[in-house]
Amino acid sequence: MAERDPPPGRKTPIIVGIGGTTRAGSTTERLVAAVLSSCAEMGAQTHMFGGDALLALPHYEPETSGRNAAQRAFIDAVRTADGFVLGTPGYHGSVSALVKNAIDLIDDTRTDTRAYFDGCPVGLVVTAAGWQATGVVMSAFRDIVHALRGWPTPLGVAVNAIAQRPFGDDAAGGEIVDPAIAEQVTGQARQIMALAQSGYAQRVAEMIAQTGTASTA
Ligand SMILES: Cc1cc2nc3c(=O)[nH]c(=O)nc-3n(C[C@H](O)[C@H](O)[C@H](O)COP(=O)(O)O)c2cc1C
Image 1 (spheres, helix red, strand yellow):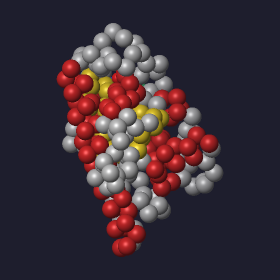
Image 2 (cartoon, rainbow, N blue to C red; image 1 turned 180 degrees about the vertical axis):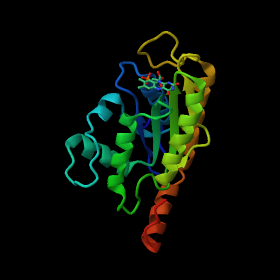
Image 3 (cartoon, protein in one colour; image 1 turned 90 degrees about the vertical axis):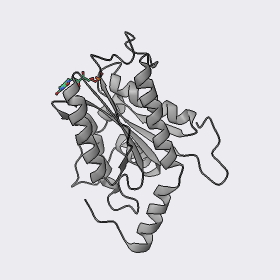
């Protein structure tokens, strides 16, 4: 639920969070939730797909059209979103399979007027156990968003969960104790909301409707 009304003539932006791991207290999931929470404070309506929700998505099968309830709920949320927060752990130097499977499912929107993330800001969160993975995974994540026609925010949140411990020793709490990471989370939310509130995604959809479908990347 939005905590602040949008300016007159503008709808409440819907921001969808996708990310986490199967681990209870996933740092990745809590950071994505923190960005969403910051977006909500700035007036967004938010929906979160964390580790459990991602685990409920079967392995994506592009050649079939049957989708289960979890897949349909996920795609419905993606279609209504004005912006996204994606979060992944670095697994073997890249995006985890759990998160990538959800991203692959977004291919079901390929024939929509507004396909994929077209026109939408996408905030990215990466956690890893080392500095090298935070950078290379963020770069891979940005490439994926570009392929899906999204606009990665300039500010990514890349956290070394061992060296930085964003939530201190709290294994499950949502309070970020590292002020620099808290500032990154708020800054990313600001960048997501600025574009989501601008009506840019709607304008992109109108232009595609007038001029034909955008080409694939
Ligand atoms: C299968 C697997 C592969 C991993 N690969 C890497 C890696 O290549 N580089 C790295 O720095 N950390 C790696 N990690 C550590 C995770 O990225 C790190 O613990 C992450 O913060 C876990 O996120 P979570 O708290 O949301 O579960 C790996 C962990 C697992 C389970």
